[in-house]
Picture 1 (spheres, rainbow, N blue to C red):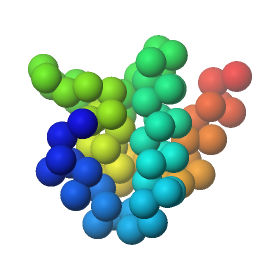
Picture 2 (picture 1 turned 135 degrees about the vertical axis):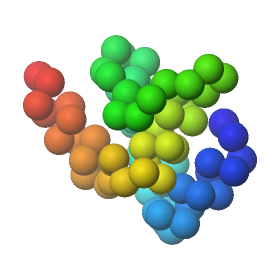
Picture 3 (picture 1 turned 30 degrees about the vertical axis):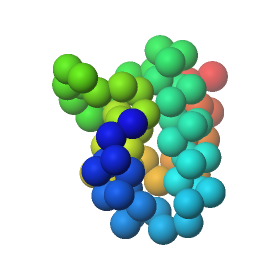
Picture 4 (picture 1 turned 30 degrees about the horizontal axis):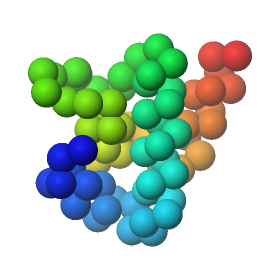
Length: 72
């Protein structure tokens, strides 16, 4: 996980436990085959993708549950 992405995401979601839970849940979704909401660039791991999605406003607390529900 890239430290600069963590710092930027922490500015968007200021509560560390919520940020950790959101990233963890989104990483599980990505590993299960769900598409990334941002461009996958070489060298970015799933956690980096999740952090980038948070930074760009693509996901927020509660949105990951909506993604799961729509794909069931």
